[in-house]
Every structure is written in C-alpha cells, then in structure tokens.
Amino acid sequence: MKQETRAKLITVARQAFAERGFAQSSMDELTAQAGLTRGALYHHFGDKKGLLEAVIAQIDAEMVTRLTAIVDSASDTWQGFIDENIAYIHMALEPEIQRIVFRDGPAVLGDPSGWPIQNACIESTRRSIDKLIAEGVVQSVDALATARLVMGALLGASQWIANADDPQAASEQVIEAFVAMVSGLRTSAFEAAPSTGHRAKPSAPQAATRRRAAS
Image (cartoon, rainbow, N blue to C red; front, side, top):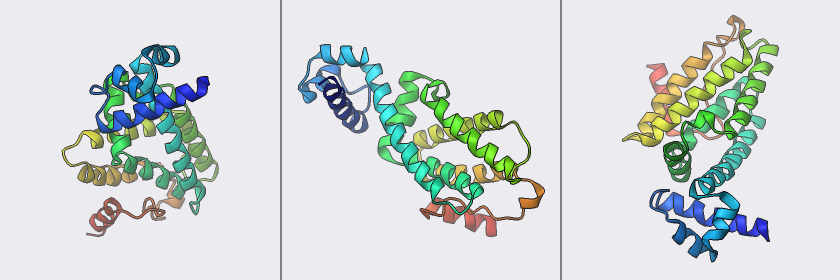
C-alpha cells in the first residue's frame, strides 16, 4: 500500500511538472489528482521538493536504461562512449526531460553536480574511461578526474540547451564541440579513427556537424 501511494504521487507529479512546471503545480492539486491528502505527500516525500527529487530519480533511471542499451549496441568501446554522451545531449531536447531535469530541477534543487544520482553517472563514466585507457584508445589520465570533467561539461551544456532560445541549434553546437573536446583524449595510435557520433539514432545535429567538418 505504501509503495502504491508513493508511485501514485510520483506519476501525478511527473505529469504535472512536465505540463505546468514545478512552480505552477500546487500540492493541493497534486494530492487531489492522486486522490490522496497532503499528509500522504508529507509522509512519503517531506515536501514538494522531495517529490520533485523522486520524479527526477525516476526519469534519471529511465535515461540510464536507454543509455546503457546504446552503449551495449555500439561497435566498440570508444564508439559506445561517444554514442552514449551524444544521446545524453539529445535528451535535453525532449520536453519532459528538458523541463523537469534541466530547468526546474536545477532551479529548485540547486547544482545538478551535487545531486546524489550524479554519483552513479560519474562512476559509470569513470569505468568507461578506465576501459578505454586499458584498450590503449585513450591516454593514461586520471579516470575519475576525467569523468568529473566530462559529466560537468555534459550537465552544463544540457542546461544551456534546455534554456536556449533555439535548443536544436544549441544542441548542434554542443555535439560538435563535445566530440572535438573528448577526441583530444585519444592516443596517437587512434587519432585517425573517425568519431561520427551516435549512429544508433541519426539526427539533424549530427548531420549538420558532419557537414561543417567536411567543409
């Protein structure tokens, strides 16, 4: 029963936050839509901010599942690394993720780099970099420091995309800059190998990036 109540509140809040935003979604409206009382919200989440944290955690878990599938389908470790990070950038264009995770989340909960869920992202990125170092694809750098730099860049860029006047154009610029930046980590033996981006889901940003690279 407790899990059912919690799940019901998260479902209602997620829809409301995506459609109206956090500030415009009152606790009375959320609990009424869920058929529950304010007491239930306080009991399970403490307050509306706690409910937002739970919604973001749910969305983040879904993002991780999608990104893991992309990595698993890549032709090699480097391509998986590139595809995963470009897919993350693409997610900043999705309305629900854009509004809840990259706009309202930072505004209400503070710097995303300090959110508990980011620890898992950093650790996953560290493991990828360690594997790339072991394969001789990436230079021998501190994997944890590099993972923090990569995630910091992705978070900052995704927030910029989410708040940009033209998110699509901003994402094109970010993808081009990101691939150029991380390609600098490659060893000389692999520098000539192309990095075309997220091949599992071709997109306008990637096409534009390739056109600019060819010109």
